[in-house]
Amino acid sequence: MDLKVDYAFKQLFGSEKNKEITVVFLNAILTKSGRSPVKQLFFQNIEIGGEYEEDKKSRLDLLIETENKEIVNIEIQINNEYNMVNRALYYWSRIFSEQLKEGQNYKALYPVISINIMHFNLLKETDAYHHIFRLYEMEKKYPLTDKIEFHFVEIPKLITAWKNNQLNPWEDVLTRWLLLLGTVDRRKNHFYDDIYQELEEIAVEDKSLNIAMRVWEDLSRTKEERLEYEARLKQILDEQSKRVDREQLEQEMEEIRAQKKMVEMQKEEVEKQNQEMETRNQEILTRNQEIRAKMEEEETKRKAAESALEQSAKQMALRLLEQGVEHAAIMHATGFTATQLDVIQQELKKDQK
Image (cartoon, rainbow, N blue to C red):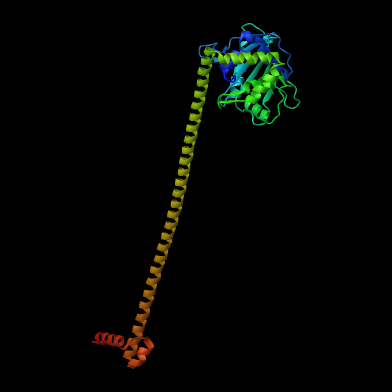
């Protein structure tokens, strides 16, 4: 069984008969934040919320109370729903607030510790696989309270560190327990035989780890447990498949929207260019009309000038004809041809009659 599947995890760590294993596993985590070792623990109701009819109810993976009244919520998550931090904050706030019963003093509130084990990477700022968060003053870094604490464990980073020979499960108790969780990866259908063999060797000396590995093997062989596990695993993988399909559909829709936006932008650009071209064409048309009007005006003036000049020359020719000047001299002076001069002379004769 892949112990990162919540059903298998709860069968191993959430059972009264395996409580000693859970104590060792829990202490391996809590000692990293300087908390006192847990000697005794009590499994609590795993449903929170629902104080009012409209409240959202949530089922926790594992809720534990220690003999020191510390409350520990352990969540195991295979699929990345991209809401892990908010989810952890929400669970913590509900558990913390539900401690206080009507009439109780705020002193009755005890620390709530949130442990989140994830089969995906959450924090990009570091390659470390175990992160602990508390409330600190930003400049001096002193803690505000010990009543809020978050642990985030990223199994893929753990496996990467293992492959890079950066882990020593012989010396670090938490490392060996987390490696136990990472031995099987059902999403990749992979079994890390090298991890398993190393843990088997350590288990010769580590009684709690030895018991955990034997219980794990028994769970994997029991038909009823196996069927429950496979059903839960199928549900998880189906949810993952649906999420991937949904993300792919959303990505395709986003690409379609981006393409549509690009087409609209191109269309707007073409319309803008067409508008600019139409404006330029209109300006050219207006300019051509102005030029044509000016040319017509100039042509009218030219014709008028030519007409006036012709009339003046005609008057001169008439006077010269009356004075009996020879035709050759008149033609030379006015520029008229012999034919034009004959016409003018005939007009003169008509006027004299």
